[in-house]
Amino acid sequence: MTAAAVEFVDICRDYTLGFWPRRTLRAVDRVSLRIEQGEVFGLLGPNRAGKTTLVKMLLSLCRPTSGSIIRLGRPVSDRRTLGRIGYMHENHAFPRYLNARDLLSLYGALTLVPFERLGPRVEELLARVGLADRAGDSVVGFSKGMVQRLGLAQALLNDPELLVLDEPTEGLDLSGRQLLREVVAEQRRRGRTVLLVSHVLPEVENLCDRVAVVRRGGLAFCGKVADLTRPSATGPARSLEQALRELYE
Image (cartoon, rainbow, N blue to C red; front, side, top):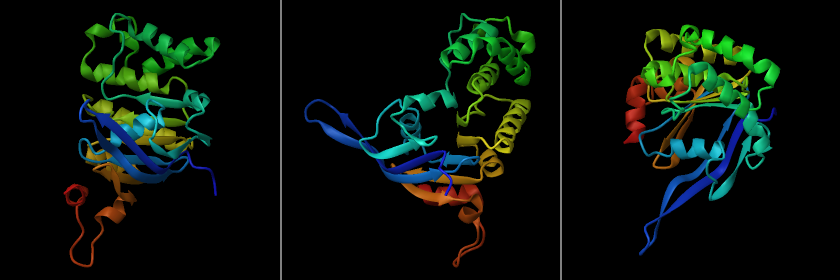
């Protein structure tokens, strides 16, 4: 079997709250799932279900309390694999005093894009996301949608093997959403892996090969969208929204 792009094995994550008395909150509870290479994989769930915690552990922003994570064929503790990942956050904390070109140059240097390739790569991505004519403008004057486009360019700087998109359509107009779909389709064609965290169900349904649904920290479903919506022995086919509502409840 080909090595997975990402594998969570019996993952738990606990947080300690309060001072006296102290109590433990389990944010992720014994989750096991596998994301294959070249797959577009959706991560769904209601607010506070554990999605963000799973992504943070994948990106080494926090550690699991127990269990193990494999990232691009290596244990998650091997931080060298982080240079092969692109991450688009829902709420960007970009230095707003920089212009778009300088900001991408900064992030490209931080992700170790070779110097001789960085300049052409920045210009290529600015054009790709429709910001070539605003390359010299300060980010402080950008709209939410423009910042999202810049965030997508930033996530693609190092030509990642694994692209993690956290609510990427937030603030994007129709052309921006079409751009995102094209980028995801291109990553799939190239055999790259995409992890999509989203509440926008049509995007998930159209883009994802498989999805995982987390609820109250546990894994409620993992499989194809068609398996989630197909008719059951007791009822007709359901929409994705109906199926998720039943799982969430």
